[in-house]
Figure 1 (cartoon, rainbow, N blue to C red):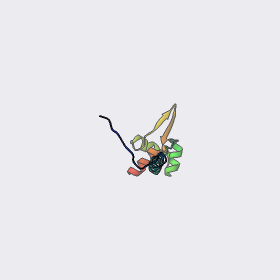
Figure 2: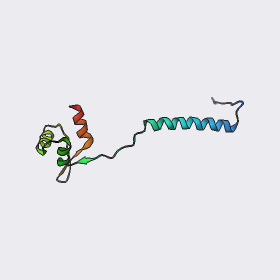
Figure 3: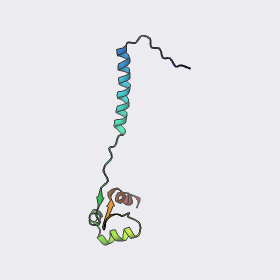
Figure 4: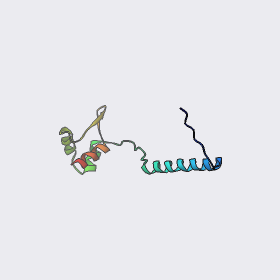
Length: 91
């Protein structure tokens, strides 16, 4: 079964203009909802303590209690800023 579309009383220019307007409208809709991806920021224990205005021992205790998720590279410990902010929101 073939689908056939017939156009009456239109010129190729009008058809092209109509298609371009539709594409432009879709692009504008995408622009409204587009959020560029931010790179993940990793913080040290000291930076987390400073950010939360607490002592490093509090950061250590919250990590042991599972309230903060730590990530490591070698012997270094890091925290994702997004996870810190999420933990604060959940409280």
